[in-house]
Picture 1 (cartoon, rainbow, N blue to C red):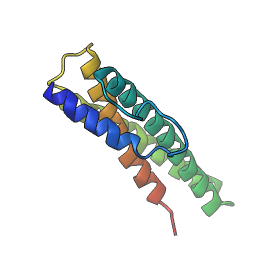
Picture 2 (cartoon, rainbow, N blue to C red):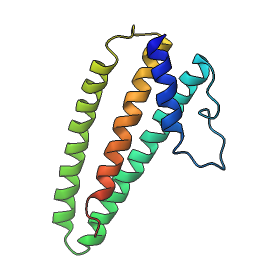
Picture 3 (cartoon, rainbow, N blue to C red):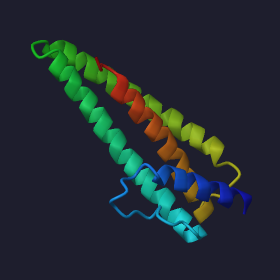
Picture 4 (cartoon, rainbow, N blue to C red):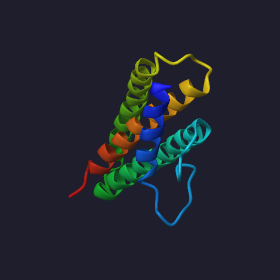
Length: 133
């Protein structure tokens, strides 16, 4: 139950970045079930934002080198390779973080979702910083 308290607090903190005007599963988390739903929502949101940050980065590259197709393709390939490696590291880190939870349980899934959401949020910020002037 100690890990559930941590999970609920983390889920609430991660859910706080959602806009106040929209209702999310992270509003008023009072039970384990609501904590699980919030963790899943945060993971889904963070992964969507990560994809958008990656797509924006590729567009910044295209905009920065409009007449240099080979350079754009080379940089895009490097970023795609880096993203693949980063995903592997993220998953390995999350396997370490969720080790104490029994796989297949809701607590494990919520801990996994929370870990992926946190790592994805960090990666989104990093991708957004690349090429900014």
